[in-house]
Length: 234
Image (cartoon, rainbow, N blue to C red):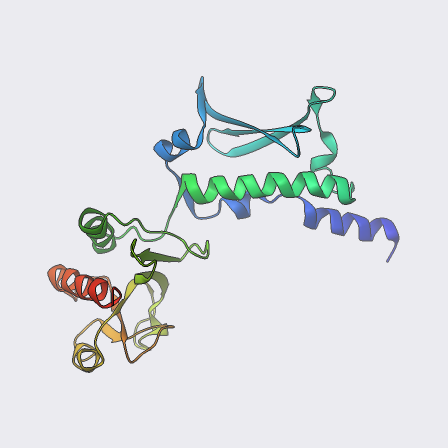
């Protein structure tokens, strides 16, 4: 393979993939404003100097996300940033600095498209109202979110979107479930109920997975959440 072809392939890898960063994410305008975005006519704009004030990153959000980087020394757009054939440590540092901020915006100003069914929404609202705890994406995975106690940082609930056959081979569709902690003796009884299973990717002796649909009464889910909250406080 010729050197130029290798360089171009490396360059493509180094370019910032906005589609990947904001994949499966829905914008939250209030969080956008809190982050520092300003409404300018019909788009939201955010500016931040990077790399010791050598460059200025400008992020614009309207229907899609776009960004520009200004070289502050000559007050012109830094064109090498988006040219795949331009590689090297210097331009890579600029790209990495921009990517970190764009990923931070995605994480803090956007919400996951998952976890939108009616039961899941009620669970999220219940936990927010009772415990003042928001769903967070500990691993920045689009299909996994956690509820964390504020006093000891322990998880008391894990929301997961996956194919139901991961917990029950008879289910062949996408489901949303919550992992909750329970006493070992209670787990044995609970898994006999419709929609409750030994936990997916958790200690199966002390955790259960509840599929969030109409099979389980919402009040029972709330009780299981309260119980998990108490158990993780010990």
